[in-house]
Structures are given as C-alpha cells and as structure tokens.
Length: 319
Ligand code: GDP
Ligand code: CA
Image (cartoon, rainbow, N blue to C red; front, side, top):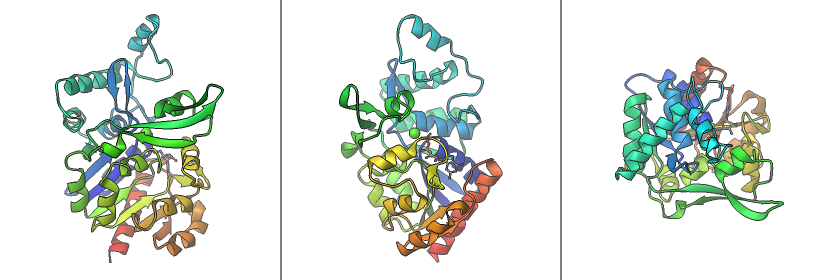
C-alpha cells in the first residue's frame, strides 16, 4: 500500500509514528511536510516541521517537548547572547544547530531543499520518504494589531514569542502563490492508495501545504480516498493554539467545523474523538464519512490504533 500523509510538526510526527507501527514493512509512506514555518535565524535556514518529523521518526526527538533534540545543550545560544545576538525566544540547541548548519551549507552549495532533506534523512532513517511541500521559499506571516499598531509578523514570532496571545487577523503564506510543489509531491499524491491528513494544524500546517498551487487540486483529483483526523477534541486543540489561527480564517474550533472547512471536495472520511460523537451526523450530512474513535495520542499503541481506524475508514469509503 502506498500511503501519502500531509504533516506539520508535533501532531503530524506523533501520528506518523503510530502509522508506522500500524502498517507492514511492504507499505510505503510518503510524507509531504509543511515548510511554511521555516525561518532564517543566525544566518541559518531552520525547518521546524521537517525536523520534528525527522527527529521523532528517527529517534532523536526530545519526547517531553515534542520538538528539538533529546539530551540537548545550549552553549551556542548562550555564546550568541553574550554577543547580543538573538532571538532569545527561539530555542535552538547545540545538537539541533548541526542540522541547520548542514542544511544551510548544502543550500548555499546549490542543492534544493528536497535534496537536503533526503541527505539529512540518510542519518535519521525515518522509515518514510520525507518531502518538503516545495523547494521554494514560503513563509507564513500573521497579521496582528497590538500597541505597535497593525503589522505582519513571522509565524514563529506569533507562535513562539507572542504565544498567540493577540488575535490573528489574517494568515498569509507569503510566497505560496508562486511556489511549486517539490519534485515527487504531485506524483506521490496521484499514485497513492490512501491519503491521510494527520491531526496537524488545519490552517498553518495542512492549510499551508494545500496553499501551494497544484497540491490541493491534486488531492481533490486523486483516485485514493482521503481521510483526516481531528486535531480538535471537545472544542479545543489538544495542544497548542490552533483555535487562534482557525478564528483568523473564520472557522470554529470544533471537530465538525474543521471537517467542513476542508470540505467534501477534499475529504472522503473524517475521524473525530469519542468526546465529539455528536459531530458525526453533521459531518456525514456534508457528504464526508465520519466515525468517532479515541483520538488522544497518549502512546504509540493508542496512536497506531488511530492510524488503523483511519485506514479502515479509507477502505470503507473506497468500496
Ligand atoms: P506543530 O507544527 O508542531 O504545531 O504540529 P502539527 O500542526 O502537526 O499539529 C498540531 C496539532 O496537533 C494541534 O492543533 C493539536 O491539537 C494536535 N494534537 C496534538 N496532540 C494531539 C493528540 O493527542 N490528539 C489529537 N487528535 N490531536 C493532537
Ligand atoms: Ca508547525
């Protein structure tokens, strides 16, 4: 079976770990990763979502945090601070720095982000084919209004520095309109037997991937069933501040509303948590097959069970 999954960072990566545990060795998983969170820091290109997937599946992740490296040290950051060079609010540890150095060195030498990602994965062996959504630069910006007036800030500044404490007025994937899908992305979608939307952020993770011209169209046109899992349980994100960016696009933080936001043109099936059993009828009325199953990724076994439920729903809608 050829499985394609669109993925952001933590939610995507944890789901993929369960998916890998649920499938057999003959199944092939291609992950299309969000690069809208990418940021240039200290002259280096940082790809937080690609790295979260790579470290999580490759066994290098800081489990408690969900991002960054395990057993991390912070000497470089402390030294930079002595020079008055920040930003202080973004956590880049010493081990993590090595990844960004290798990536930036290869990009400067002329390799594409897909080639660099493939090279980094030689070390991490994530067990999936990890493709950036695009080799072109896309950066999600957020329009906010605070005491400094109305302005656009980089998504990382909004999320990490401001903790999404001010309302997001608009989410703009800068550069997406002229970006092209990375090599292999459209081919993988067209050749897939199943397409999955993990419980990643529907706006700034999956939404950004779908904003690359051609990707949304390819998913909608793909012969494979498309099944998503809700990142919203009981009217709130399980982790993080997805409600803030959902509000910016006029979508309620509710499992049903997120399914309708993707819509029947993209989704054939949708899983909600058992706490959201009430949402099933409304989602089905919109033409999307829906089941309520436990959706908390408490451990790999529970997550593998979620992945099995998603694959089972895909089989049902295929028939
Ligand atoms: P990010 O890039 O690190 O923010 O990660 P993603 O976009 O891939 O995933 C973020 C989403 O994962 C958040 O909106 C959370 O609600 C969701 N999430 C995190 N843990 C769980 C979980 O255990 N179950 C479900 N259903 N969603 C989760
Ligand atoms: Ca992210």
